[in-house]
Length: 104
Length: 169
Picture 1: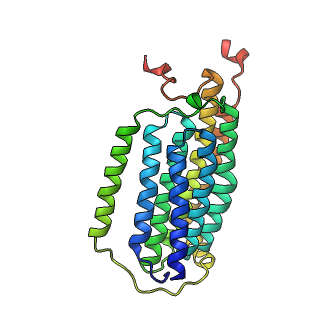
Picture 2: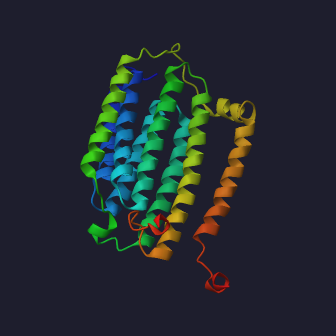
Picture 3: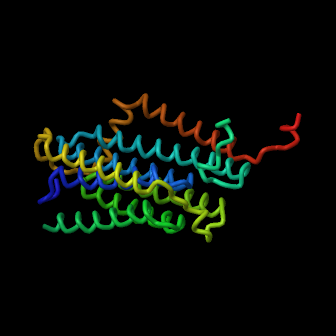
């Protein structure tokens, strides 16, 4: 493990990134902006996985889970952006407040 | 000492880029700042002795997701018009909730006596990850390929332009 760095360094860094992603998801009204916030949150979770994998004894489980998270993030981004583009084709906007057709 | 310096440089890069992503008024600036955040996270992975995951992150996030996001931003709307392109509402409550959540979790991190394993000797990880994928995690690995196939087909079906002739019937 890196000299002079403890587990808490990495956990605090990932928490700061998580808080930024949470703020992004809550405050953005652009659907793509919300997806970017989700990407930040997934990255922070991955930092946690790898930090615990290294400091918890060097097993490979954490790294395998990080790869699964990256794979699911890719699938989520592909489908999410496809939905955004489909909404844009129909409504000419991706403002999530304007897309209220189903709210009755 | 060197590791600490590298860590703090990467942390500044990640936190600064994430701040631009979260707070910028211009959606294009947010998108390109995402590049800095992803690259910084790659460096953190290398620092955490996860060489294979770092390369996967570089290929999938920077090479795939980021390019896809830039395409989606450019394809959707009048990006020059800031007030339309990246409207943000409820910033104050969102800021309060995020700050409180972060403070509580950082407090919990420092209060928790984490179980720490023995000091490990760092080796290249591809051998172990490959064995884990084909041994312990063989079923999730196969399921992942099905999920990716479903995402591929789903994206094509969803984003295809609606055929007005079939819709009117």
